[in-house]
Image (cartoon, rainbow, N blue to C red):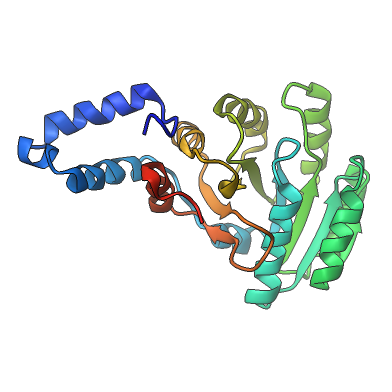
Length: 252
């Protein structure tokens, strides 16, 4: 667990619980110890159903730091809902400043055969959401932000306020340092985050920072993403799989 960068104080606590709770015979059994440790760890991770969130509030705003993988996460959600579930999806690109963001969104929507709308302002977003009300899923891909830039947070807040009955999902790369995840979440919590999409799980050898962050923040895990963009590379979050990765099973 320490080699996976799980917080040392937390590992110490697990050891103390094990020593106080289990007999010497159990403590000498490696497989039983792993089983008990993983059960304790899984109980501390908050997991929720992304499908249920979306069914209740289909306007899904994806937020997160630059490079977190929001557009790719949006494409994976769109692929799941159109190809696997046969639902109607609309994509609103509210990232109109970063180079290539619009062309990337257009490439995804053209490939999936779903409508794309652009939102340069909060008023544009309100109009786009209203126009897409018949869709089962309305994806709002926002611009990546700098957690230390108050102006960018204010701009993001202005956009989100025009969609009050929304599902707000934070997208976070598994390769991000835990301290940066904490800073991004602290900045975004004002927007009442409904869940977390952990992206790029195949791009790091250590899942400890994700586990630490999920355990301490208690932001509900919704989805995991990994690998190249394809069907099946967006999966419902699973605390058991996350803890299994910490014990050397990795992500394939």
